Image 1 (cartoon, helix red, strand yellow):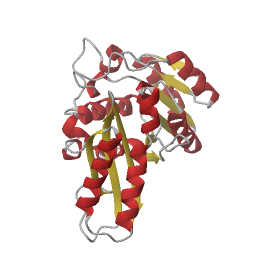
Image 2 (cartoon, one colour):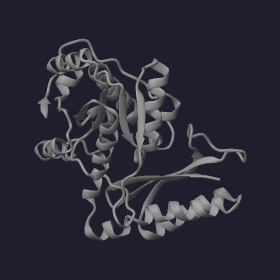
Image 3 (cartoon, helix red, strand yellow):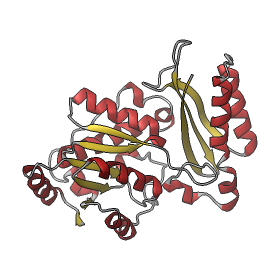
Image 4 (cartoon, helix red, strand yellow):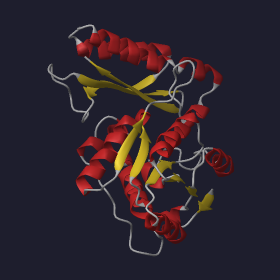
Length: 282
């Protein structure tokens, strides 16, 4: 496995692979890899001839009071995992390399209206930062396909919108949520949880499953179900940010005719912000 930290050598390798007719795959990450990331690597590896995984902690998607400076950086162990997973190239640029310090500013990309709801309400500008970084990666890697996890479901739809609006010929793969044995969605930020909070954290997914079961049973009092889930989480020690039912295709509020739905939740547990979601059909 090659490891590169600047754009020009990466593009040289990519150009050679493309000249040989290889199908290019990309898995963007912020590192500190876990099984959720590796499941995306396997998903992309099945469909690509050559696979690039990026490790880049993107400052544009962190708010001023968020955890950019303390976000875990474990490049050596990440590289070992990726080599074992038969990744062809690890791209680990610095911020200056990624955004070309000293040159014209990289094109800022708007996530659009879908980036202003749900997580976007409490993290203004977050999805614009995500879209800008991913757009930059698409430009330098020129992938034929890219894999993103469904745990960040709103982010997945932001990326699909980006590809559609810019007319990019990139197949966006959505990887299923990887979960711990007790149901907690795998996340790098789970390491911030202390022992007590870690024991409580699976309750978030339990509430999503309970709410989905009630909605699928035909209960029409959706607002009451969602409010009850918020109350249950609050009692358990969470500080809920939102607990919402939306259309799976675009995250708008569903009508009675909609059948493909998603429940999405975000809540703080101690100082750690957890997100999760559950897709289901009526």
